[in-house]
Image (cartoon, rainbow, N blue to C red):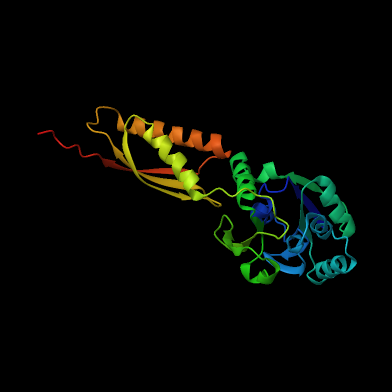
Length: 271
């Protein structure tokens, strides 16, 4: 069997990128957190994310349970898997998985930095730290709601470069994910508003809309001071740069897009 390893620290987005990466290198199966996924569908195993604490979650992920291990080994034979990607937090972990499942030696080692940009890694870490969300690279219908007390929601449909669907993701918040700091949406809005009103050309911020997820972007509606006796494109670009810089300084990652909707302030003439 052709065996590949993909490793990186928890919360850096390995599972989010797993389906696309496996498809890119021509691998049909994935082992992720105790699950065997073939062609984007879970066929065997029980996810470590169903566990109640981190210790049992790690044991589940490296197949220390006999019945769990044998179920996955049987499925590998049944589906005649010829190539597989093992996902873990380190080379040591993926080597342990390969040994437990008797897959043979790992031929290629990849790391999260090979499949995700630093910007994507920073964003994934932030979402894990502030929302406690984990991604499972399997369809929503295959995730049992009753395993999770707090959150299960649809993720994304995953497509190849040729626009063929190769799988889906589901977002969960495991019961063992107790430590995260939730930031209210008003905090982001206040920061973005403050950044804008400090800029010389801004008369008023009318509205701030923000989306944070796999894509993070904001749409800010502004009133500008008049008369406009300056280069508008240059000033708006400077404003976007300042917003991006302040957002990164406070939250540790960059927005994917900053949209500015512009209105001109109407100044009343004095009688």
